[in-house]
Length: 451
Image (cartoon, rainbow, N blue to C red; front, side, top):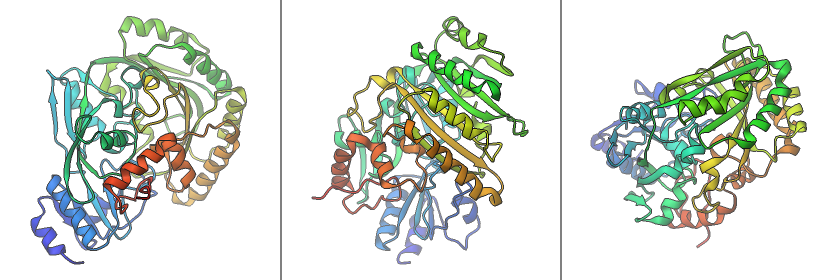
């Protein structure tokens, strides 16, 4: 490869090839189903390294992938035979408590981010699993426990330091390159490599959070209660319902409701009372906790290195037909780690215009995600088949809207269009201006508009 020695000599981070120690660990991401082999892994420590890696890839006509936290289920962070621009060493976090802002580099994960901001009694929306990277989640919109109160992570984004396809380092904000800033808030990794992000923070220390789980034979009643309960809840409350398995490995199916209330303990007690008094739960663990702890509630169900295959879509509604079909399918689930989750969108996230950011999904309602997770490669075919069958079984209840970061690697172009929605044409025009050759294409890709 032309210029490899020069790249190595000028690089402040690490350059790994398949012959180097540490290569195999560096190429692996959260989803163990992803097994790709880059020709070069450029483990960057700053924007100069990122620009050098991009220039090297261009000179050798090699595909580029970009790894932040490496959590994305589709595995687009890793290229086969190309250059992986790896930001996982870029971990700087700088909190300004007076301005209530934070600048964090592209390799930071939400657990690290939350700990740093929590030290100043501040927070912003950041996912539902703390091992997720801030970069991919934010660029894809950034749902999370705090979105009813504070909006998406992308709604709290103030600026991005971006390395473009031609190696320029841009500070992108409402005041500088506003078209590009609009596109970065929901357009994924199509426009460059995000070296760092600056976010707006909000006063928050403690939340009321936890899980209430019911026996599986009560699943229909639980999901119907969830539908009614979420019909009139405050912006302080995020609620996720799901068909899950007991975390003890027994494989016992359960119907669960997980909550995070960002208001006062008194308001939380009042608002959560109907939930805590409903039915005869097998387990109820809800109480006050630091926000960083709340953002780890689902971590144990998604350990690094296990096999993942997901399907997701927004729903037309949470009607009885959907509920019954989902329960029927879950009864034959082949893995004791798999879940079918329903997320409720409301509050601040639904008060932003469809085209105010690149994220078009601003309707109050529900998103479903079937997260198939398993450990034995011999059961891969069975788990993938069950996931596809379950998704097909509820297809008549699905809306023509998809959440970008839940798309798997085999989702077709129509799913990508559904993720960008009515904003696709404008995104394609921004792509033409900043990446006309589609250098950044190993993503849920937006092809450049014709010039």
